[in-house]
Amino acid sequence: MSMRILFTAYAVRTHFFSMVSLAHALDTAGHEVRVASQPELVPEITRAGLTAVPVGRDHQLWRVLKARHGDERWSALPPFDVADVPGELLSLGYLRAGYGDVVPWWFRLVNEPLVDELVGLCRWWEPELVVWEPGTFAGGVAARVCGAAHGRLTWGVDFFGRVREQFVRLAGEAGEPVGGAGDPLGAWLSDLGGRYGVAYDEELTTGQFTVDQLPEAFRLETGIEYLPMRFGVYNGVSVVPRWLWEVPVRPRVGFTLGLSAVERLAGYAVSVVEILKALAALDVEVVAAVPGAAEIREELGAVGDRVRVEEFVPLAALAPTCAVMVHHGGFGTIGTTSLHAVPQLAVAEEIDAPILARGLAAYGAGVDLPVAEATGERVAHEVRRLLTESSFTEGARRLRADMRAMPSAADVVPELVRIAERHRGR
Image (cartoon, rainbow, N blue to C red):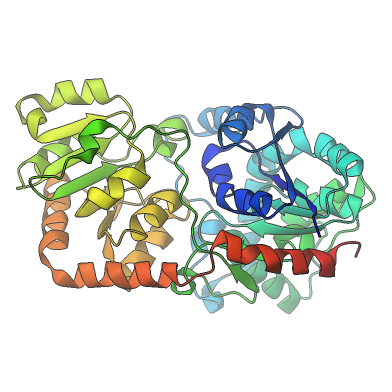
């Protein structure tokens, strides 16, 4: 039976990228698939070969963040900074205060501009299944309005689900109800849903199901039932350069710190030039994909002939050619690199990246290097270890095997159909 399936995410490119493989799998299986987001994301959706539906107004998240923080780094984000802390060490007050801060400047800010038109779209099109990224809570509300089944598709560690579960547990132990004034997330969702006749329950926070693209060993401890799906590689519109066809003469070290720190924070927390100069001193070939490539090439000076610096290189094409990858711990970077069994050095800072980096290290597939310790000398030292210690290659191969053993997006489609049939109209 063919279904109408709606994906929705507020306008952040990397969050949408995590949806592309499943959306295409559902489309290929004969279902009618559309992707709803704010107008800013529409070009990315259509470039991915998917049908876009613009809803609402563009959010102002990045402008607000810059106004709030200026040049201050905000990578530690309560309450999610304690997502991997043992439950017995958590306090209700800390989680409540964190939600009290993050709900107005993040969740409200990105959901309020799109929720009304998203609800209108669902009333008109009547999807049978809505898949939403974990911060687009409007997706669950809109699904409930039209009677669709709904669930989340993660783009990293499920810190949303873990922290919410712990908040509910601690509130229960304290005899406090969820969804009321003492629950900032629940109170906001109660108001948001109430505008459209939707009564609050915990499904509005974590969905009726959750598709998770991480191997089980990376998951945080929760009672949530996950539907595992192998990470789907998608780098956006890409062109593979001819020089990438050539087999490297020396071991190739890939280097990327992503775009988030440039777009959302006050630039990178480490010196790119210092690190690249240190790597150039090793007997390796370095390929760096970083914004401002021309300026960095100029700063590198004489060592520049040992380092190739580009604005963009498709990671899916670069990773298989590398002996080591140095990166920021981003979900897409780790997923793509891990599928090619490449040992990794993660210099992680933002939101869930430190948790992912610790997971890599626990697997034996890489090194977790705190940002504060990421000098050029230290990065070069760790890269040398990754190149010479066979345990990292073995760990990377174990990780690849575990990822390959997960169901593909195509394999997940029949189960999603069953879930939708079970939940819709509830």
